[in-house]
Image (cartoon, rainbow, N blue to C red):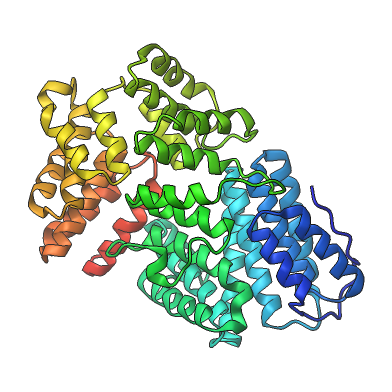
Length: 483
């Protein structure tokens, strides 16, 4: 733990992004956290009234808590962040940077509470961020950093479930996905194009990439298309690789990850090995085993553990080591937690038998290797490889996704509809089939069908990635004027 001793009485400070502060942020973003701590200690001794030290320390605490991802340390980090937030809030010389720091710290706390699965506390933190960013936007509407944060808040609120949005509207919290995303795009562009805001550029890149990937359906979110250099620093590279991988650009993501292999002096981010292993598996590289085992052997937290076991099981299945594959899948329900989507899906997958055809096509599709995935699916028909309606739904879903990404709209819709109608259980493939069919019908201008499938998607509950799927379905209904 990196500890910074700062005077507790800081009621008349100032906010100066000094050279040391700038360097500290750069070291944090490259995960040289010990170096960043030393810089902040030196700045605190020389300029004890500089509140920017507190804001940078909050970023350092969040980075370390994210990397460790251990419950006890996460709880301690939230307490430390709240103390810093209180100091900044009580500073009588408050300016726009104070407000930005308060919003960022509330977001940090909210994200850490999500990791602890404390949904109500996370919601409280995000509502604090909403209120503070709203006030900041009223006071500084032309500041692009403020605008970015406010855009993120209203887009996020706008994407929440209908019943929660209705409740929040009673207490003054309203949202709009399109307006929020548009504000974020404009603000992000201004931040990158104006050196005045350079210290915020990495944080803006990360917030924009993650939010846009989650909320935008009708365009690819490619870092360089938005002026983001994926190799700017370690954090940007990790987030860029993740976003690219999720959109099927596996080779590009692997190229980034290979260039940022962990170096001596960097604080260990175990997630790197998980992400790298996942990408190597999709590329058919047997070195995925080394990366995934490195993750499981060194990571002490509880997230991505189920998912890592599943990926290793798939690797052994493809290598025809059925015994190892089965034993790893049997472990999935007994390890880690089911808080995040990948772990929830891994636990669901552990309930089903290992179907070689479906898993091979799934891995290839996730990596963006569409022709190879299609060849596998068509060479082994659904009736041959599938033993029950749940597997048939997965087969048609996989086929639909391949056709969709190849731009073959009508075959994609046909398979999505077949996947949705195969059984009545709530499952990711059924919900996403409904969502993707709706998006394609919307693209064709067939709004009645689009509205039908968006609504059907929202009717399904209790499946992995539900929040993200429902967010996109609600955004679709809003575009249809049906929400």
